Image (cartoon, rainbow, N blue to C red; front, side):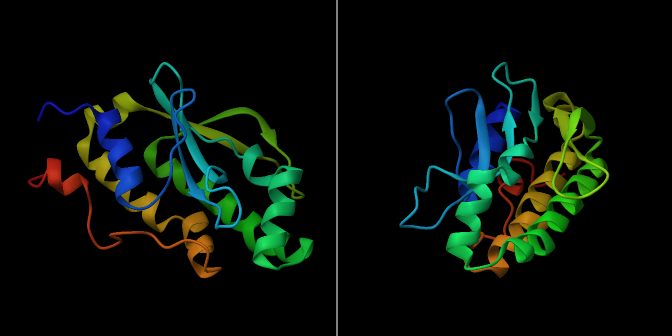
Length: 172
């Protein structure tokens, strides 16, 4: 298998219907529904420009403009946002620990105490443990933020019962 892990991760993103922004490195996000720009959405993570690791950017999930847009197109109140999405973001971060993601930064305040912290994972972790890559694909399509988006009806994971990982590593 000569395929680069980063290239496989990029394929995983599009295979399951997520979007990616490739301005600096690449990212994985749940696109906003039309008529909003599908070039924006719920940002799950970015790959650093040098391509060494995946990093969450939780501040993009909870900033004022993102909050207003979600409230508008989901037709919910600010309180429903706080009670609906904020716990999913916290759960998402907690679940990332299974991938040996390290806490980084000073924490993000999201109307709760304590702050939640961005996480990072090195691509070398996936290269050294291919099962981790498979588990990460499963996590991508079943994490609390993705499930929230599906529950609210503005995103549907494509090929939810099929893993792209198996195309490359069927015996792992």
